[in-house]
Length: 410
Image (cartoon, rainbow, N blue to C red):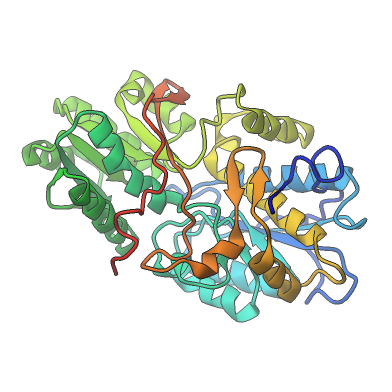
C-alpha cells in the first residue's frame, strides 16, 4: 500500500503552525519528549561557513512545519521546531547533536553535516531517527539503523556523474577532490562506477583542504590527465575558483559536480562559465516551477516569509522540506504518543509514500537492502546544466540507481 502526503485529509495531509524557535545558534525547548507532548522536529546544518553553507535547510524545513501547523498540526497538536547551526565546525556539530537530545527532539530532518562520523554516534546513542540526511560521504551515513535518507545525497550525485560523462560523449574521466577522507571515499566510489560502465578512469587528483589560493595547478593536472570529463569535489567558494582557473588555462574537459554544492548562487558567481557544466541531484531543478512539487515548495516558502533568493531555495532546502513533510506524515500515522521510539518503529513499518511527486520515501525497505550502501535508497538522480544562473535539465536520462554497479562492493 502506498500513501501520499498530497492526499491525506484533503489537501496536503501533513501539518502546520506554531514554530517554537528560539535563537541564534540553537533553538527549542523542553527535555526528553514525554507522553502527550507535541511532536518536535530538529534541523541541524551549517550556516555561514565557506566550506559548507546551507541556510536553505532551515528555511525549507521551517516552511513545511509552518504549513502543517496552519493546517492543524500533527494529530491536533502544533509541531515544535529546533534548529542548531554547526558553523561547519566538528565540535559544534557534536554539540548540536547533544542539544537535539537534551531539547527533546523526536526526529531530525534534512540534516547536512560533513562531520557526521563524529555527530551521528551521539544521535544514535540518543536513539533519534534522522530523516532525510544529505550524505556527504561518511560510512555511518549508509550503515546506521537510525538513518532514513530519501536518496544518496552528495554521494549519490557523485556516483551519478560518471553516467553523465558517458551520456555526454566522454570516454575518459577523472575525479578531483578535496583531500579529506569523505572526499577520497566519494572519489573512489565514483571512479569505480566509471570503470564499471566502461570509462577510462584516471588517478584521483587530490586538492589540499586548506591554504589553496590558486587552483590553476590542479586544473592543469586535470588537463595533463587527458580526461574528457572531470568531477570536482570542493566547497562552493573553491569550486567557483577552480572553474575560473580551468577556463584561464584552457581546460576543455567538461566540469561536473553535485548540485548540492554548486547551485544557482554559485552559477551566478561565475556567469556563463556555468553553462558549460553538468551537475547532478536527486530532484528536478528547483527553478522549474512547471513541476508541481517544485511549485509547492516555493509556495510554502513564500507563505512562511522565506527570502526569495537562490541561497534559500536550493536542493538542500528542498530536501529538508520534503524530509520534514515525510517526518510529520509518519508522526501523524502513530496511534498514541509520538516519541523517538514510536517514530523509529513507524518508520520501519511505513508504507511507501509519495512526496509531492518528487520522491518516494520507503523507509521500511531500507532494512532489507544488502551491500555496501544498504541505507541508501534506490532513488533516481537527474543531470542538469545552467542557463546561468538558472538551472535547467541537461536532456539526459535520469540515472535510476547510481550505486547499482557498486552495491555489492565493500
